[in-house]
Image 1 (tube, rainbow, N blue to C red):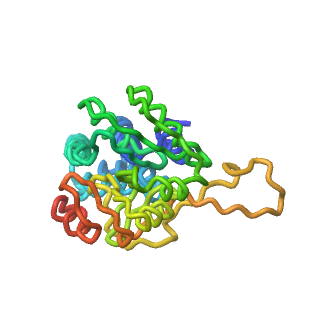
Image 2 (image 1 turned 135 degrees about the vertical axis):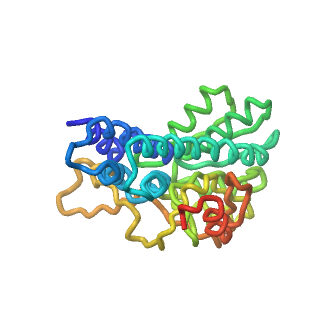
Image 3 (image 1 turned 60 degrees about the vertical axis):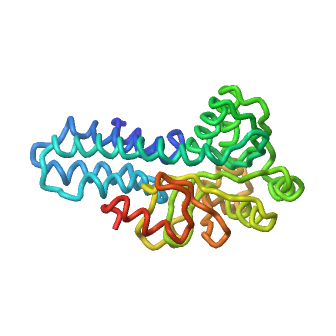
Length: 296
């Protein structure tokens, strides 16, 4: 198996997970492919094909897919041009995340209790930066079955020195949000995809959104606008995971439904914490396209 196939396998299997990590792996794959371009292949077309193979290995990864839009808008350039565009896109991501993080930290206050779901490197980095600034707060995180990504979240927070961290079973989400609605200051989720009507995040996010809305808990999705997908969203885009992740030795005739993500409409009251500031869901499309013209 060559390195490109290995990267693709790792993205599909979740060995590489998180929108930023996947996007950076796509950029890495393009650089690797640039070193072995067949003599009879146009540079742009060949590298774009490799990039798409990795970027679309999972369907709801617009941060990676937008790299293809950005880098290969012109397919008749030389190798040096495409490598420069790879570096530029990586810088765009890094700078956007820094700006977004500055906005997110403003929402964290001493004595606050904050709720999160799954593992978002964006959310955990904001918690850690707020802690390093001297803020004292508590975090409640879900275990996030079936892959238990919540364990990654709590381990990162504890390793960073945050002491008051609680992991809950997924079935307790609504109970916690209702019983502790006076104490929980905000729900912070990441996002895998932003659309004009809502955002996509780990399965379970929709229930959290409705519960937060019902209990009057502020609800934020922390996401850079480079995750905006200009395509019209449809449920067919939601990835279905393998039945083996749920029950390896399940009865032969049993049907298992295991979507990886939820689509959360903006009318749930969510606000987007972005590099352009904290914006309403209805503003996502216009702000994203004005910030990054290649998304139009």
